Image (cartoon, rainbow, N blue to C red; front, side, top):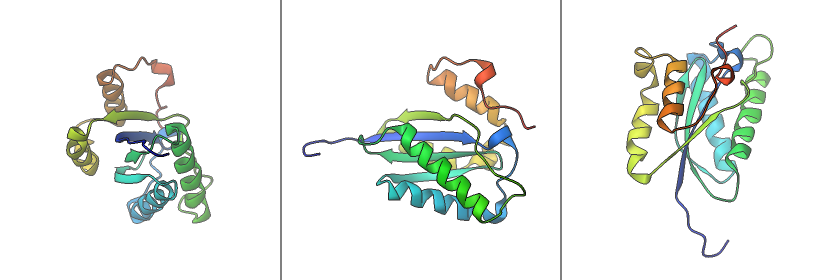
Length: 153
């Protein structure tokens, strides 16, 4: 659209169904590359992606033409099919319902990238659920404990 200018940075956080530790080091890089391709195919910019065996953080530069829910849907649908098609896990892989989406200013981009790149170090000190609750609280998002990502089954 002519004369439309935007600068939108969103960190998306989503978990493996049941928060099971299914994302393995042996193929996580391949998964991140695939998710990056999905994002780029939708004409967005992947700024950073990383995670842990039970969840992923993706930091994306968005265009205002597509709702966040649509890009998350594309990422989750395509990546779960990718994992299942490659038989990276026994049984059927799925992402847990829901996600977190947190917006940032340009001045915060470097800090968010560093945070995402250092997930392994960060999670030596803090659990995913504690991290997620902190995000919700810091961004002043109303939430209920019963709707937070479920513990591993």
